[in-house]
Structures are given as structure tokens and as C-alpha cells.
Length: 142
Length: 142
Image (cartoon, rainbow over all chains, first blue to last red; front, side):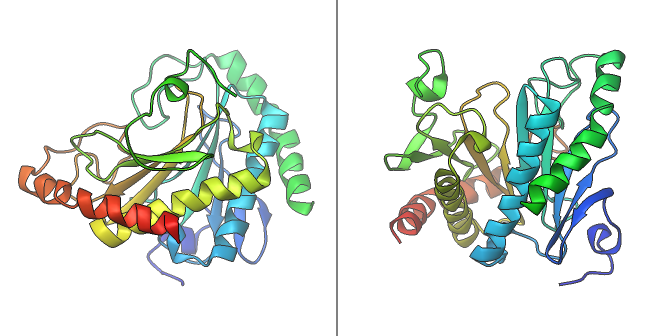
């Protein structure tokens, strides 16, 4: 359940906003996507179906808490949620606020850029991060 | 809960393998990714957190049943799971078997192609589809 060669076993994976004994929630440092969060399982587990159903439910509950906090604070046009892990096979969920004017919309953030970011919009969104941190903690404490 | 302009309200969205009153599971017609499934909520709902927690749990349970069936039958190197919906904001989950030799690995399937597909491998994987259909139905009937 720990792999010394795995970056999510050996590093936090972002700025930790919330952590319990099973999982942690981090803010991802992505200039194009302020508010991009990851929910990372603490133990080294490859697939969701490797977890017990209780653990899976707890993991997804945290994903929905992050989604709720992002929607409340950042009012995105859409939420994207994904568990990929091809490069880092340690379960983590991407929870990404998407906007009609973001670099890749309506494509996934992993595809080709469709436009240059609007710097003022990005700054306005980044200014919401303190409120987002607080909302995530509040959701997780409920 | 129905939108006449939404392709997932007006069309099945793929070959239906299983359907109940809440959701359906379809096989996606993607030549590069035999075994690629979608779990589609029948009603027109934009975000997971727009669903009740019971509905969300039922939806995710179907995603894990599909993941289990894919792992059992297709033995992929990794499973990718994602709910994006930027173009079709009607909740649907992509459940994708990934292999080290597939077109985009280790990138997401929405990024740049990294190689040409191995035709023989693809044919071998496509030959597993009858077994995959059966395994999905079996998982959902449990």
C-alpha cells in the first residue's frame, strides 16, 4: 500500500486543503485552471474496484464535496471529473471547473488548446481560491 | 428532465448492453478502443451534484460494475473513468480500458496520438466484446 517510486506516495501532489487518514484534497498548480482540485487516496491503490465498497463510497463522497464547493464558489459552466492514472497508477480524482472561455473548452483539458486565456478572467478566478479552500473544508467537516 | 435538443435525450448514445429505469450502459463505437463503455443517466441532468445522493450512488455502482466487467474480460493495463460533458451536458461516464500499446497511452484518449494501433491486438480485443456484454449484464443482475 506504499510504493517508494510513486510520486503520490512520496509527495503531497499539490497544496493540501484537507486531509484525513484515508484521503487528501489538494489544489493543483495549473495556471490555466485555478480551482482545479485533486482528491488523492493516501494508500497506493491502482483502480477504484481495488477498494472496498465502503472506501469507494467515502472517496466519491469527497469528490462530490469538492464538486459542491467548486460550484458554490467558482460558478463554473461545467464540472469535469476524471480518474485516469495512466502515468501515476495511484488513485486520484481530477475535479476541474470549466468555463466557456477557458483554453480547451469544450474539449477536455488534455486536448489541443482552442484559444489563449483571458488574463483578467483568470485573475478573477484565482482570487476566489481563499473562498474555495474554506468551502472545501466546510464541506468535509459536515 | 428531457431536452429535445440533447443527443443523449433523443438517441441511445451507443449499443445498449443494459438498461433500467434510471440509467443505461452502452458500448461506444470507437475503432481504437474496443470495450469503451458509457454509463448514461436516462434523465437530462447536468452535474453529479444535481442528483440525489441515492441516485448518485446507484449511478456510480453501475460505473464500478462496468469497470469490474471490463477488468475481468479485457484485462487492461489501466482503467480510465471520466465524466466531462462539456459538449453534451447530460450526465454520462466514460469507462475505458487502456493498454500500454494503445494509440494514446499513457496520455488520456483525448490528447495527441502517440503511435499507430496494432491491428492484430485491436482485433483480439474486439473479439472479447461478446464476453464483455455478458459480463456487464451479469454484474448488473447481481
